[in-house]
Length: 82
Image 1: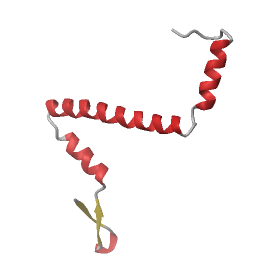
Image 2: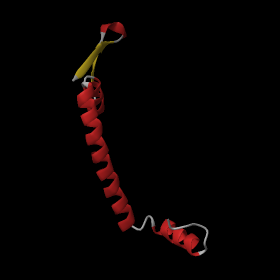
Image 3: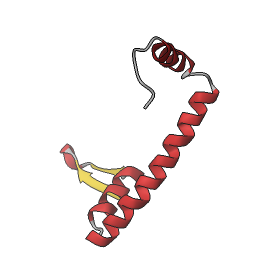
């Protein structure tokens, strides 16, 4: 989708709409029922994406320092393991 607009001097410019902008426009047109279904789908999609990122971070050792700190604080009695 393109948007055309006029500039000074009678020139015309065309701007391509980004995918995000297209999605936003489409979402605004959804019925309440379809919007609810989209929210449910997005929650599941986003949770899976977050889980994959978390797994990559763990595998790369990005959380090792935090894990060691948490276990040390637990051993020192500064937290509980409820």
